[in-house]
Image (tube, rainbow, N blue to C red; front, top):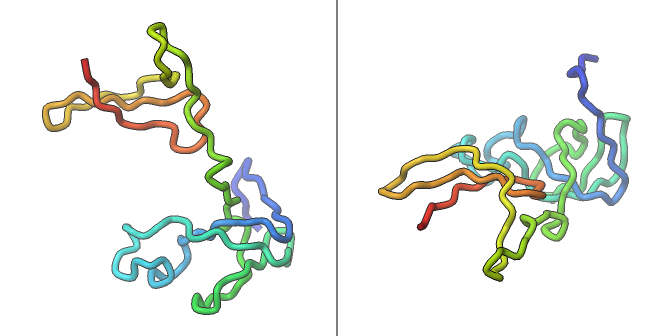
Length: 136
């Protein structure tokens, strides 16, 4: 078996919620049958039914999906509920308003006559960088 150096094998327990990668799926299963590029990279949170092997888990797929329900752990990703996702850390500014703490300004661009900055926020776990329009 060939593994990537430093890669960790994840193990899931029965009842855990996981996303399924669309990498090796037919585009018809993703909801975008005409375009793989526009389709999602991960679909649904599904429940883990059982652990088949150290590197394989059976998940509870809907009957209409017509796929074999056993997948390699590399095709699964743990589900994070919206309450688990962190928001940018808030701080009280010198004028009393509530603001968010910026970790870094990563990039700058000009769009339609405005200046935009790519901002990375402190304590944001997923997709922590966002473009913000500069206003004086």
